[in-house]
Length: 235
Length: 284
Image (cartoon, rainbow over all chains, first blue to last red; front, top):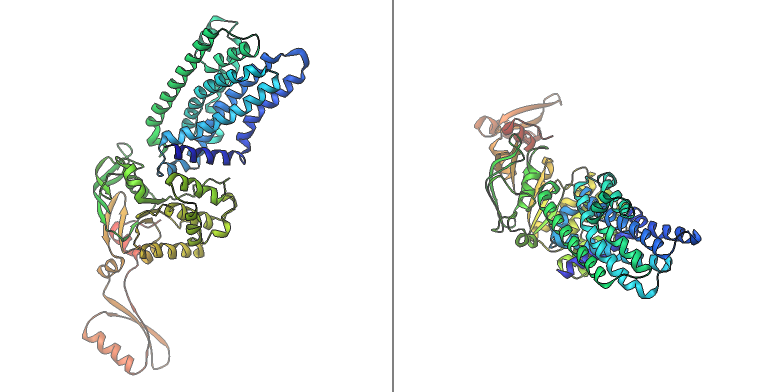
């Protein structure tokens, strides 16, 4: 199983180097972080870090897996992969792992660029990994519904917008707050603000980690359910 | 190797792709499914390779039902789909490395298969830079990488130029001589005629006839010969005679003795003509 997941991971890593559409999605949040940093005192480290990782989680964490899955469907390469020893779970895990590793790498650079204290970075990366791990299966679900790569933008638009734009506005309105609670990016956003700044209570961090873990499990179950329902349509 | 009995597949209440087909394919056999577009050929391949579940009937590959026991069947089958579905941005080598890793094979196998399909020099070329014929040969390389015992081919030479198609035909003949069982679907009757030991005519989800191409031709032959004879004035005259019979034997013998016979052709129908005769449909 590990060998096959690694095979998919290596293939995705090789592919990303020549896939401009995907690599730009990883790079854009970093570019924004540089721009935010150049604004001078207008944005502090927590603001730069939280906004940038929100973009990274939304754009790379959801959009990239949706494109990867949609392309496999569009080019009918998924069909042949399913005839290899790889199981659907291994294919999805391999793709998700590549997205996770790449986003973590870009998140690390973002935290450093934003000026987050070095001691806080490991905790922030852990929360980022949990948040993105909950986003990736949802992106893959978008990919299972989109007939081709081009349409992933349209099919997933409500999801991308909600995951990226909603978290900062949850403080303004009770309804938005309630909706925001079910989004992993909201938890990721507020953990980043707290941990990149003054720091947060351990109990709250533990509670947030638990929520993100639960969201991750629910997203994986949802992906499994959707894939099984759509397996015939994908053939 | 393959056993199909009363196989049906309906996509909805009105659309039946297969309406109860039955056939068997023996080990080492080159079996062809000849039929026009929409006859149910791809549906049959998808069921036999575990990509689709049938509506009814039975289909077994190596004794297993593929859609139920795909993990058991996978190591024994190779599939060449009707579309070149390779990773276009990756090189040929990277494409095959993925499948080597998945099957747990040594990378040396890549050179072996690429040499056999004549693509060793293109190993480091991105797939998107390969010609259509090369991509098709690359699909064969991928399909035989894990040394399957049965190769399923869905319209493997569709849209290829005659030189590329011939190269693929020779490769398939070689694989079959080595003992590989091959299941081919095609609407190209010359291809089926050249390659297949036995052929099934599929039309509107029904098998209209099964047999060896030669036997089918004899069965539907008009039992006549067409001869070209040189007359006394030197002009060529065409005559159609019964294949057997004293009158034909005497006439042909006489022309041969006098050195007047220029050509003699048996009047067996082509597979396309037989297909039209038994199904009432053209192979389009």
